[in-house]
Image 1 (cartoon, rainbow, N blue to C red):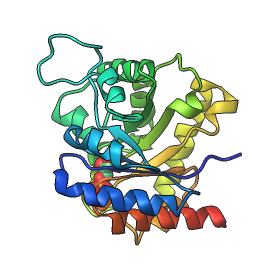
Image 2: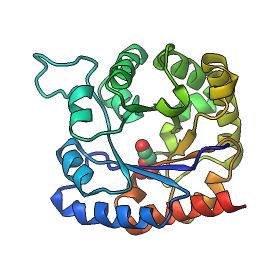
Image 3: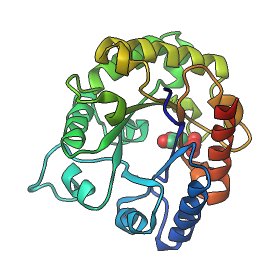
Length: 254
Ligand code: 13P
């Protein structure tokens, strides 16, 4: 039984309390689109407020510290996020790998902490334009994932999702092609089966991210092995975000 399409909004460093009305509108619309699993990762400052408003959507965070508590000024642990209502955490996003020097190993310890706290992990991966142009994108992404994903995972089908986000497609308006996505997701699928076994590995959702919008969503979400989308800019208004969710629901109808 295939899982529902998973449509996740990553608000990044956007949103003040004025955005709570968008979150409410997303939640209301999600109640009418139950064939799609809708989730939002607002900034930390809105996490608890969005969680309290949401009846249908899951709320998650965009990062966590690998430790549980202690003297880490400015950091937030997975346990604290779960306490604030987070059901998942996005980890290994290229904006953290590149902007904060996060290594695969650090990302893996964060993932272990998030799983221990009972949250789902959305593990991001993706190559730069330079790596793609050198023809090494697939090898790079598989190495990145192999080193970032925890090996021992209880029920990986429920607790892990992958987001393939080519760096050159993020925020550029230049999404990857259906063929490139299908090829990369196929390679990631093989890795997931290798890591987590056939039964669960075959169904873990692999999201595509990078310049997804309501106009291109149907085509991109229809690519081979795409189980949903991780959306940045187009997740900031309920109209465009739910336009993508609607497209995902229509694909499932086919
Ligand atoms: P955009 O949808 O703005 O390209 O961002 C994608 C992304 O980085 C989501 O995590």
